[in-house]
Length: 397
Image 1 (spheres, rainbow, N blue to C red):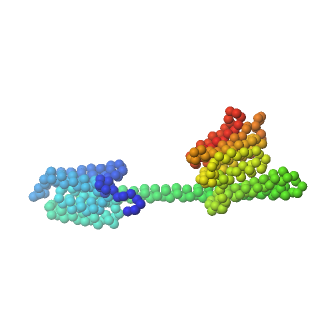
Image 2: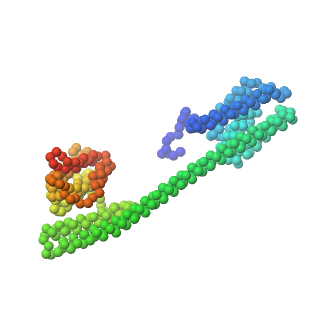
Image 3: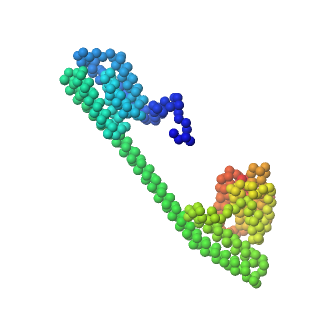
C-alpha cells in the first residue's frame, strides 16, 4: 500500500471490492447471461437424467436443485475475479449434483475467455477426464459413449467460443492501443511543428526588429553626443536611445520565450515590480509628457512580486495608450492599497477635442492583454470615457 494513498477499505466496501461487485453494468449483463446459460444447461441435463435414469441411480430433485443454485451464485460472484479457482471447484462439485454440470461447463467457458490457453488446457483436460470417470462408474457402456461424445462437443464449443471472445477482446485492445499511440504521435508531430514555427517567428523577429531597433539606437546615440545639438534635443535623443536599448532587451526576452529557452533572458533579467513604477513615470515625463504619480501605497516593497509585476505592466500600457491617443495631455497615475487587501491602479487623462490624432500603429490588443493579466489575479478592470471628458483606466488586483 502507498503510505500517502487512501486507507484500505474495510467492512462492506472491502467485501464489495473482493467480490468485484462494482463492475460495469455491461459486465453484469454478461455475467447474468452466462449464469442463465449455465442454469438452462444444468436443468436440461437434470431433465435428461430423470427421463432416462441409470439403473440404481436415485436423484433427490430439491437437493440437486439447491446444489445447482449455490453453484450458480458462486459462478456469478467469482467467475471474473477467480476463473481458475471457480473452474477447479466446479470440477469436483459436479460429482455432487447433476444440475451443477451446467455450471461446470460455464466455468470452463469463463476460464477460456479470461485466461490464456496454457492455463486453460490442463484444467479442461482434467475436467473431461473426471467426467469420463464419472460416466464410467455410473453408466453402462452405451450411455458412457453417448455422454463422452455429448460433453466433449459441449466443452469443445464452449472452450472454442471463449477463446474466440478472448482473442476478439485482445484484438480490440490492441487496436485501441494503436489508436492511442497514433494520437500521441500526432500530438508530438503537432508540438514539433509548433516549436519549429515558433523558432521561425523568433528568427524573423530577430532579423527584422533587432536590425531596425539597433539602427534607431545608433542614430539616437549619435544625436545625443552631437556637441552642436541643443540640450533638450540631446536629452530627448538620450531617452530614445535608452528606450531602444530596453526594447532590444524586451525583444531578446520574447525571442527566448518563443524558442522555449526558459533559462535565458527571463532568468537573467530581473522582472519589474511596483517599486519601479516611479522610474517608469519619470521616463514618460522625460519623453515630453506630463505625468503625475500619486502613490498612496504605504509599503510598495511589501506588495507581492506577482501583483507588483502586473501592476507595472498595467501602468506601462496605460501610459502608452495615453501617448498614442492623447499626445501632450496631462496624465495622472494613482496607486492605492485600501485596507491592505487589494491594490488599485487608476490612470486618467483628458480626451483631446476634435478628431482623434494619427496614432502610432498597433494591434489593438493592449486592453485585451490587460484584461487577461487582471483575470489571472482574480481582479477587475474598467476602462472608458467618463462624463467630464476624460479617459479612465481602473484596475483592482
